[in-house]
Image (tube, rainbow, N blue to C red):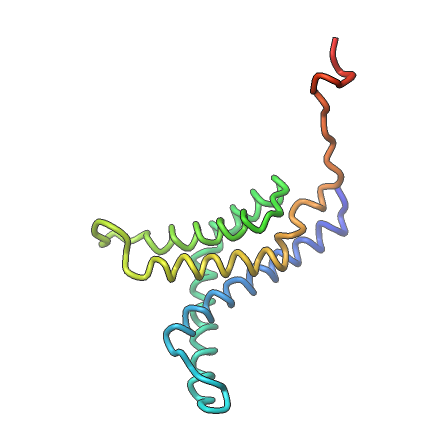
Length: 153
């Protein structure tokens, strides 16, 4: 285990989580406001960004524990695949979206949007920290137990 790489990975994890929730918050608020070019309507753009940051803080507070569990699984399992991180982000967003006591049968309205926000968050996290998940653990030793290995008899 390399201590310097571990500290660097922790810093990337924190930055990746913050950027992921900001990206998903801005995505959700973009759909709410649908502003045009910033030169044509700067007030709508500022409102969209402000709402996105507030939304990101709520998402970050709600998703901190499940995202932390996904990060631990990713780091200890050395899961650096983009598919793992995008799927984990989508799963976390979908589970948090569907946790509602008053929900009836079927999916809640807006479930595809929540999934998309989770996918975006997972992709952003992978781009910052997920690509290097588990590298701080050092070289993985592979055991060769196949028919041509010298470990037999």
